[in-house]
Length: 335
Image 1: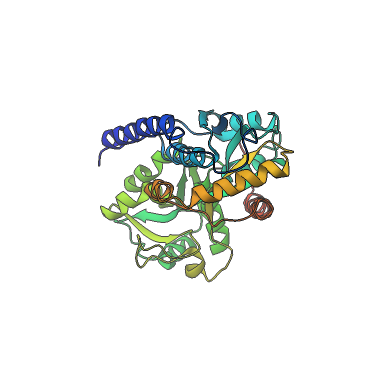
Image 2 (image 1 turned 90 degrees about the vertical axis):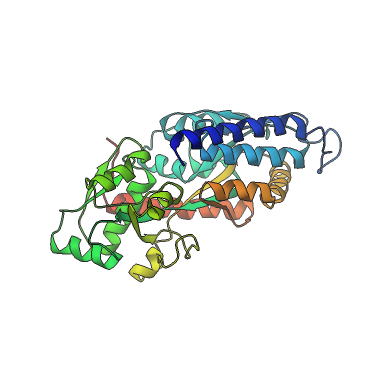
């Protein structure tokens, strides 16, 4: 499938979702609450991604299904910039009335750790529910001599500091996963940041970098075409899409390398518990919808296990502690 075909398909999907969203609310009565209760008007979902991309399609599908459940339109607003910082800063300053929500993510956690001066704190948002998770793949050039993760580690130990790993930029998921792998494996490797994740696979295929951690949705086509080779995945369990490929935890005999990107719905700090409970119930229903699960699967993600707002908050605290350690151990700083 060409990039043009993929882009065309995403534009078509985007258009279809807009049409469906416009008509869906006329076909469904509100499922929660009495007339006049929250929500009494459309709810904005601020999405820190460009329109038409995989994460945006996920958010629009979620908005469509959630709108049916709540009986009000979910209006998607794309607020792109500074790696998600602009969107998070904007929502953090909105009234906590439940009418402005954010698609929060693991990126917001790492951005706050790397740039403490940003005007938001993931810990102080209202955490409603985790929505999706995705993983990355430790990949090498298929023509390389590294057939297993043990081969890669052995080569790095024979010549410390001579191997490079690519990422889409300093502080990106691929950078943090690579750093976590390097330190956990006890090897030395040079990080080479590129200008965006789309440059990772070409760098591997040119031989400019020896390994990397692209997300599964972008790596899988090259793996299937035998241009790249998968050595391990960052998921917590094996994926049938990559039979025979171990998890990092398996390969390194560890328990702390289940490295997942994730997304979830956040609100401004201080939302009323009753509104949070209604949103959580509606989102739990929405996340069970097959249409939504299919949209996530197309982008290499899965719907996250349903948890309570309090459990989601504890999860964010744990993720913050995990990445604070990765950043400190590897002395990662924004430049």
